[in-house]
Amino acid sequence: MTQTALITGASSGIGAEFARYHASLGGNVILTARRADALNDLKAELEADHGITATVIPNDLGTETGAQELFDAVKDAGLHVQFLINNAGFGGHGNLIDRPLADDLSMIDLNVKSLVSLSHLFGAEMVKSGGGKILQVGSTAGFMPGPLQATYFATKAFVGSFSQAIDHELRPHGVTSTVLCPGYVHTEFGKVANLEGTGLVKQKGATAASVAKIGYDAMLKGKLVVINEFGLGFMINWLMPFMPLRMKMKMIEKMQTK
Image (cartoon, rainbow, N blue to C red; front, side):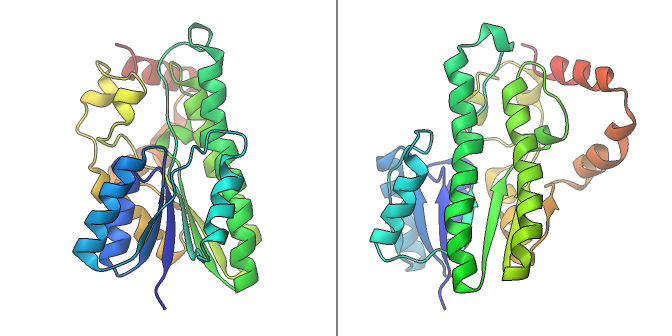
């Protein structure tokens, strides 16, 4: 049976690479993001290269009704989602009180509210059908407070906690939830988040394709949490927990200072 993956934020970066990797394995895809032109270009590429079916559903998941509208569109198209990949999200540089409040609230809407809504809607469908897999794109940012990106780091902490908890709830019903926690990845994220000129984006980082493959393979295995680099995982799990909290925050602030 051909597996269909719904991928949010599929117009570029890690989302597009999830689509390419899934299609290379013979799976159909449902592509959603705000940029319809980019989605249609990706659809043409995937169908030509892999002979799969790609369905494009342009959608703004940051709106109050975006997640429900996406779910309804998938149902109206008669499609059944076996894999849900919650990739959509964005960050934003600066001290909280210097940033427009609306920007941070929009970040919470997309990074948290839409992810919870889609997990609820499609997770229930997966339980009814007897199985399925959910992949939540978190970040190593979720393991620590993040001065100069306070809201973004906090949203990713939520994603990590939420993903592990719902895995425990859903696993007896044949559904797993995996959270992918990459370090810095070379995508549009840095530009959109206004992080250009910081130490964070000057580091080597990882490619979107490598991160997507690691996360996807971990989802297939039903892993709880995956970090894309061994050294980064060692630092997060074995070194940083023993560092004084204020020292960690100064380190993160320095990394994100222009």
